[in-house]
Length: 236
Image (cartoon, rainbow, N blue to C red):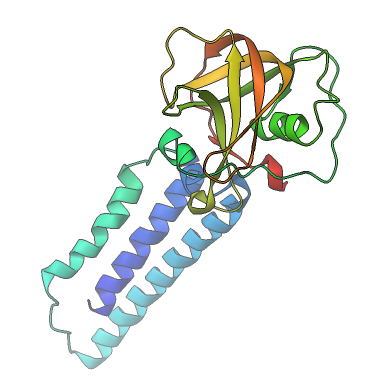
């Protein structure tokens, strides 16, 4: 591709980054804290594209020559950019969760639980308190946890969030096995808000033998997919 075409591609790529960063689309690719860098990158690419186009036009006017047109097939490079702009990929779900071992890690410390039941907890927070904190702070408390459903071959239901370090490419699941009063119909990838109590029952992830604590469900209701489907609480 000639310089003008390269400038056009740079401009479209920068526009795609700005579009993703200005909407919630970027949350399908990177964690929320990277939004300023994404917007800055898009602005730099657009500035570079405009500078390249201005320089090439000025050079052509001075020399009076023009480059030969390049094969049109080169413009197929724009298809991935158009896909980025027009098609929002779904967040990783139960298929990825069941094929990856739990990423649950022992935390350095536990903060106090807020007063009032049910206490809202992330999947990572409940799982770490149940598996590594032996449920000390959870005894006698009702908790409320939100995640998506995954069902293994044996029919065991898991409440899952994909934990994120940087971007969706490194997302790993943290799982809670569910017992108690479950909905009559369990649909993989459906998002649920689950209320329940701690149980000392603990399973092992068949993929990596990591700890998978149980939660005894007292009630559950479907909820919409959250704005940010990934969980970043383990690295904040």
